[in-house]
Amino acid sequence: MFKTLFLICVSTGALAQQLMSSVVGDWIKEDIRLKDGSPILDKTINNLQLRYIFNTDGTVRAVYEGRSGDRSYKIKNDTLIIGGDTFYKIEQLSDIKLVLQQITADSSANALKIIFTPAHLYNIGYLPEKYRTRGGDTIYVLKPNYLEPFFMDAEMSASAYISDNFDFPEYRAADFYTRFIITSKGEVKGIEILRSTSERFNNKLIAAIKKTEGKWKPAIWEGKPVNVEVKMGFDIGWSEREAMKNSSADPDAAEADLAESNEFLSEGKYNLSVRNYNEAIRNFTWSLEKNPLNVDAYYGRASAYAIKKDTKRMCEDLLQLKNLQQARGTQLWEKFCTNSNGDKK
Image (cartoon, rainbow, N blue to C red; front, side, top):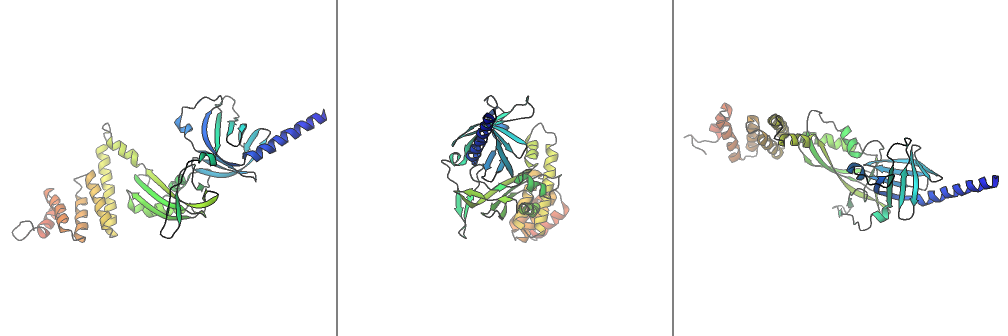
């Protein structure tokens, strides 16, 4: 009897060792189903990003929806235990497939069956986009699951972390689109703001991106760490506001336009004060698109044109102010845009 028990223990131990050896590698989620193999109709679950990179030292890098963390793992019999709180039954493990059956404490819960493919097979046919800088550095372009640096925070994705550290007023709405490089050493370089509807906050967003320094692990391609370009958008209530404005059923659309016009006006005044005249002109123009009666935007744009010595456009704005019966605008138009006979110059 004792001999039989000993043989069983040896057998299960050998199985665990074999599974530990076989599971080592980079596995990417290919499909996800219910326990009985039924498809999941929830697109949010179907499209989630999940990746496990098992190492020989008993650690695994778990990548889930942009969040990455290193945890311990072990295999007991045919059960994979990650971090002491995540349990899977290993249903199938081969060179080309890993099938994990979720084990839940609540037997009534809908357990999931997750099918993984080795990264080297998942990447078949994939050719990364890349370019060279003037300095001769090769930069790869990020593509999730295929080529990506790892943001090492188990609680927050990089975008959530940056948003959390971005000092932007809660009552405002804005849209930003950024670009930066995660180098082969995990450094954050070359931060740029490619698009912004609120330029005065650009530097604060750059500062928030810089705070991710030290939290990145570089992307790996063909076994080597590489430089990767990351592009990231930050839509802070902007799309929601635009959707509300464009909805015919929204009674507050006009009010939203006025508020947005004033926001662009503020941006224009700021850019004018720092001598960024071209951007100021764009801001004032956007302000007038939202509210053609915003006289301060006409004054601001006329000032920018005057500094740029664009008399024709300056006079067009002053004429608008005159037509809107603005006394100061009328005086300026008569002084700078008419001759002694009162005719246009």
